[in-house]
Amino acid sequence: MPDFDLDSFKKTWQEQPVQNKYDDNEILQMLNRKSRNYVKYIFWISVVEFLFFTTIGLFYVIQGKESNSFLNILEKLGAQKTPDLESSFNHIYLALKIISLSVTAYFVYQFYQNYRKIKIEENLKAFIIKIIRFKKTVNAFILINIALLVAFTGIFTVFIFYILNSQHIEVTNASLTGFLVGIIVATGLSVLLVWLYYKLVYGIIMRKLDKNLKQLKNLDSQEI
Image: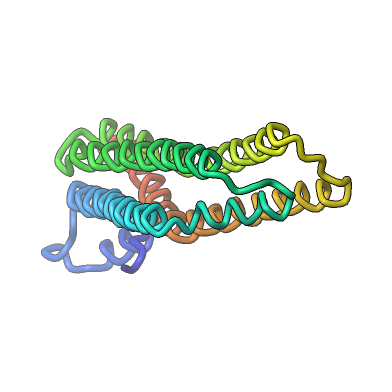
């Protein structure tokens, strides 16, 4: 979808014959419509994300792949694989997955509410306020997802140390250092990938929305 540039549009508009000119209200309608479409795009992207991660989460729970990966790490550190250990991990994993999906579902609902409440024909100041509120919601969604990733990693790390302590396993300094470095590097790379994903997928739309918002503020300052 090509960007809409207010200055270029007005210049072209002024060069047109009188009968073909657009008035400022028509320009406003075009900007409003494009802004509302950008909000709609982000809403549908979030819906697809929610369905995708729900499907992936259910697949891993059914197949037990997350449990196997986690238990492999513990076994390398010297822990013994027991039914209680597997049960504890599955409960923690399920709880964290529910929290993650609940947060995503909440923001999907918020995106939908923002989209539903934005009316093309409403007062310009009210429209601008709602667009700004939507931007804050998107930024909160991105930051909370990154924070959850770091928090969940921390919880699993603490759980690993708890298991090692409960089984009275002493880890060598080299193994402990390697484990902690691996956790830090893996977490850092995961955060980077998540940030790049949102920067690419959401960032492109948000930059277009920012441009529209500046043009809307410009129109508002001209007291259309």
